[in-house]
Length: 116
Image (tube, rainbow, N blue to C red):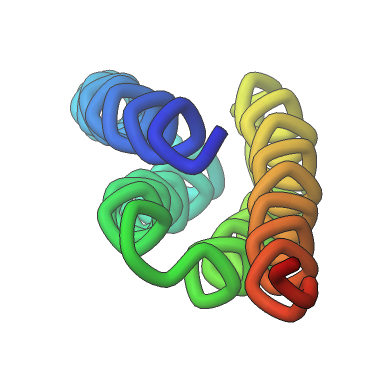
């Protein structure tokens, strides 16, 4: 499951980053500084998503923590401006954080099982 979390995290990170760049450009054209600030945080969320996806392959607990941080950043950005999609990315980040945690826990349990 850690491979799935890693690939999903990398792909969604790129998607969030591209969407946030587009929203930043659009808010710059419309002189909407609040949405621009939320989209700037969205770019950071996309970057953290991609880094968390990369960590999920070898260190699932670190990836889970970073997905959690990305979710918190997304929820923080959702209170600013008119960028409602960032809330959805926050929920997805929390789901990936939970998946990463359970991946880490199952690998830890499998490692601690006695061999017969």
